[in-house]
Length: 236
Image (tube, rainbow, N blue to C red):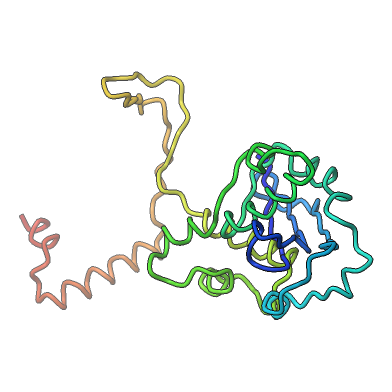
């Protein structure tokens, strides 16, 4: 499965009011592993100035972007890179809204029609940690992702951090799923499996483990003044 962790920086907050993308960072995951096949673009927003509040967040100036390519100049490369991939974005409506407007200007359809799907890690985090702060920095702190180098927002750095956050958010497994064709379906779509086909190993405790177990039982027996259930069953 090919996934692209994506982040943008912009001139302001409203794509519909004419704000533009000035930085795009993309990190590729293939079967949940970083490949190093990343993309990073700084973009000239043409005739759109950077709002001072936005500049305080990302630190990117118009002077720095003066000689950078316009979105139209990197669009083909970006579209080819994103084609068929599942996008992973934190607060996806924001970035998707800006990409939609940039692609619309070039005659392309909405972003979701150009890629294989979109995962919003902010939605995931709110479901997992309701009522808590779920910004990128907060998630890094909560999940043990090192964000010490993040003094300003940067699209590529933020995409790299989000890739680690996403892997941590999805590391667990809610259910053990075994894909076996020999099951028999019953009413309701439930499949019954013949467990006799599995040869499960039986691993006995070694002497040290057995001794530690007995010591723990003795401590519990002492604390209950000999009233533990297993002692009563053993005596019977």
